[in-house]
Amino acid sequence: MKTSTVRFWILVSIVAISGFSQGMLLPLIAVIFEKSGVSSTLNGLNATALYIGILLISPFMELPLRKYGYKPMIIIGGGLVFISIALFPLWQTFWFWFFLRLVIGIGDHSLHFATQTWITSFSPTEKRGRNLSLYGLFFGIGFAAGPLMTPLVKINAALPFLLSSILCLIGWCFVFILKNERPEQEVKLNSFISTLKQFNQTMKFAWIAFLPPFVYGFLESSLNGSFPIYALRKDVDVSSVSLVLSAFAIGSIVTQLPLGVLSDQYGRRRVLMTVGFLGFCSFTAASFFEQNVVGLFLTFLFSGMLVGSTFSLGISYMADLVPKNLLPTGNLLCGIFFSVGSLCGPLLGGLFIKYVQNISFFYLISALLLAVSCIIFLFGRKSLTLEEKENL
Image (cartoon, rainbow, N blue to C red):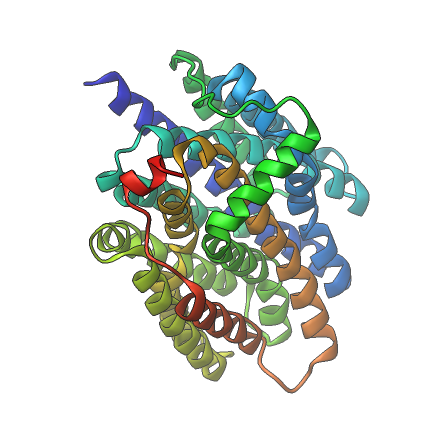
């Protein structure tokens, strides 16, 4: 088997384990805090810690990546994640868990930023959608399995955390067999100001491509951080909540690769517009099945099939729009927009649940999907050819 093939499968396997830990933590901690009497607003605030960590570290990621390469970033990130998850059972307090989730955000972002940029850089244009879809697919598989760990808290509160940390450790060990590489060095970054200039230049090329990662971040965090609270208050039991959440992730797994291949053939813009609008329709439909587990399962499954690929499609769209030397910056901005969306999700979700009593929680998500779909329709543009990129 080729070295590049082994490298690719190791990277996507690590991403799957990372997805598993994220998919487990959001609903698990939301349920634990809800059972402990923590308010929905504070519950949502705690969920934002992971994304605050991502935002805090983001401006400082590109310099070490260009200097030291992909492998050290993945090793440091993976190490922070598995150690932090293992520490959760030691002390169940709001601020200790907030700190651990913040550290996990830093570690996860280091891991994802390095793996995304690495995969994007060695993927040929005609297979970029496919490879990044596989990246999203493996993350989705892990994320789908994560919520299924929530019922284990009834056996032992520490059990889900320990199992997740062991899986992270196993995946982390495989990174050491990879040969390190560095991004293209046409761009020299020697200060924080030069990094900000790179951000500005990349935004000019591809601002439209950062909206899908924002949407995915909002969806992921609001569905896994706020929906469990909303569902429990609608008298849906914990096991059913974890099953419904897994349906969304399963849906994204089913269509992740087909949508990536379709985007290679018909363009990212067309695919993103279509899935965004249909996602608006599917979440609107979910509002009619709030206390029907079968109805929620089916609408979440269909919604996942539509919008569960928005993050990987957004990265592919960004890579189509920027010169290759700006790919690390573009990937970094995808992570930043994802984290901003993830911060907004549980905060707005928590406030919505607390103060808006007569309107379905799902309308909040539907409105966002419709708005972004319209923006891409109005302002999105076609991908640049290789010749056009070289002339930039």
